[in-house]
Image 1 (cartoon, rainbow, N blue to C red):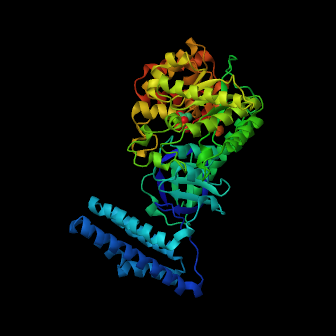
Image 2: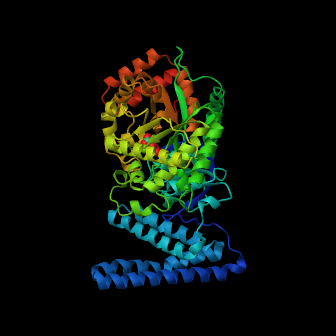
Image 3: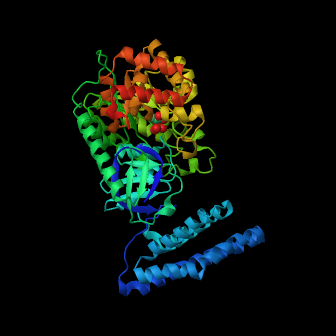
Length: 582
Ligand code: PEP
Ligand code: MG
């Protein structure tokens, strides 16, 4: 049994067989080879290794010619490994004696060697493990060729283990078969993590190197409550996890009974709780939990699930689906937030070659440089808005000029629709996300021009603390409870109050129940969170008075370390709603 620790990003405990995706996310089949097919499979394996050797020999030749022999030797070492009779012999033995598929056998043997190198306690040799992974990748590429497995085509329950999963790959997962997933990289608020929560797939990310411990087929436990991944659990551990699973389920059932109740404090103040969604089908996850509306509709996922750019009608029908399900409750449609880690077909060139995609052409900046795409979306939003209470929100606004440009394009689109005599809603509230420190610092100036604010703490934290939200190596520095974040949130709430403009928090911070007393105490009256979190948030709101919340916020603001603030808030939550402390 091996236990790995990572960042818990989507709650729940699941147990199932491992499906390992290599660094290129190959799906390695653990199929057994029929005895009469063994010779054919060995021949297939040999053909793949021959092709790999030829590839490496070509690279060696090129490197020798163009870079010099000192670079060529890198490839001669790879070639030696690829032709190593002991290595090849071990793989062929597994195929012949154990009837394993060449993909599975090659992967198992090479990973075992990589692990030996990693554990030799010598950093030079540990780096050679990367060469072995490279060899594995090459062999798998030749073996699997075009038949590389797609996540969307998984048809048996599995636990997916990968180095990394892009948001589009995660979006294509079917929760019926992907019981849970764990990745070596990724951070607490990476979009892959957010999607896991949206799809309600238990997940742990940012584990660091662990794929060399698994080959596929082993029993894996993903504990998305505590950030644990257990390979080959023993009986005692399995029992402990089954118990913890049963406990979480009973808390979830109790919280579900809050669904028809108002989200209001003990002293009768309403705190609206909205849901964040990425796909129209998630609306049902929100209504089932008693959400007051949709506070953030991340529309870019319409692009991430499709090969082609969505048409105006694609946008329109997705928005109408959401509006129809929400009746007269508000729906905040955020315009495209593509770029950084959310890259769709057609926009790859925008991020390729960018040194710092998080600081590059993403979000509203991308829309302002691709006006036609932007207008297509705005037309669909305005047209759908006749069917409900729609509000438009621009993401990642960092200057007043940007907000004004976006609003001007919206006015242009309204003129076009009017000219074409197409019905649309003109008096639509226009808000912005506060995700960049400049926007929080200038909240008073923005408040004169916007109809509402929504604080996107996922990005606000990364830009304020200079911590990539997806990078596990700085996950310990990425803290929602940092005093600088509290101060920026307070600034925005106070600016909103001064100008009578509503403020919501829609980042992952608002999905964490321990921050609810703080946010309410800072004056927030609207939260928007991933649907599974809604019942827990409601429970906290219903167990606190405004004065209590204010006292908690005041005390938190006297502390000067994120760690102390978060520990203090955890302690307060334990007094209010002990069941919610994980
Ligand atoms: C945020 O940044 O907090 C946010 C809600 O937007 P996203 O997570 O989609 O970047
Ligand atoms: Mg954001």
